[in-house]
Image 1 (cartoon, rainbow, N blue to C red):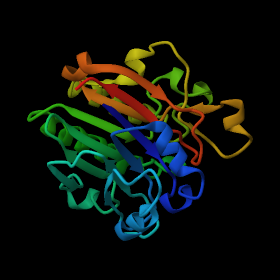
Image 2 (image 1 turned 90 degrees about the vertical axis):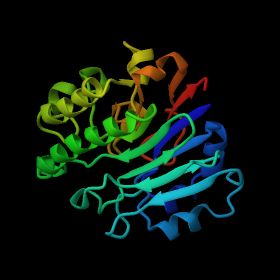
Image 3 (image 1 turned 135 degrees about the vertical axis):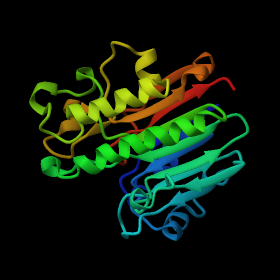
Image 4 (image 1 turned 90 degrees about the horizontal axis):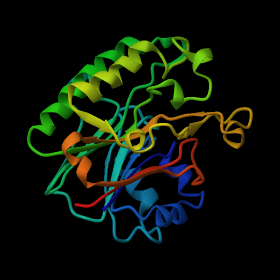
Length: 258
């Protein structure tokens, strides 16, 4: 079974950029999208009738603010149940969490809040990290969890091209954000599957549109496939699909023997 995640940076924009070929090449059974930048009906409209997507059911969660944030799940297997949000009103207005329960596992796709320029949203981000950890921990008590998405943090110096220049200055690489992911991994016994399988490999999933960053591979690893530790024996491979384009992020996939 292949699961994937992709920050599409606008679902209505990416469907015009060889999107169906990209989905065909990913060949995933379940895909989590982030930053759809569309309301639920617009997500369905953007994906409706696209070649290669006939086998997928589409679920989405949109922000109250139009054209902002948003998540979606495409699944070839009908979920048992789908719901959106953390269940905390002040954190659930931006469509950042979508959860699909399957027979053997929970699948959660998340678009973690960016701390924003000047780190002005860092307090909100820190509140989010605590709440999201509790949310995953609760799900994990019933069955294993696969959590995927743009976590908006480079966890270790190896996860970004210029760690010294960005540390405690740039959103996504402050100690508070790093600690938030560390706490999630340690406190809920989750595993960063790609780093687990590639402990010393340098690879990125996001590149700025400026200065030819992608061509020069000056990037950040912001997109993750996390699993409950007890799923590790089922993990076969994890891949960062650097050469799938259409967004400033590339997809990440995880292959499991379920």
